Length: 68
Image (cartoon, rainbow, N blue to C red; front, side, top):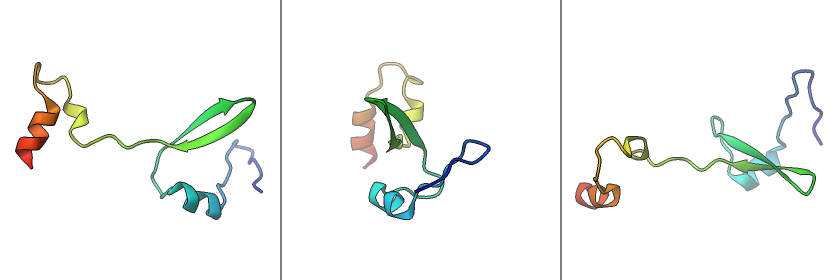
């Protein structure tokens, strides 16, 4: 059990951090499902994803195949 602080912060218990694979610095998302708050680990973006759309008509998957 955790208690909400005056700054509306809460500590995620260790067994839940381990089960969710959470590490310091990971981003999490909050969702409401049927009146309950659900915490989910945010999926990490691929390193080349930030360049998507920079070069028009370039296939990222093809680039990755060539890069490997």
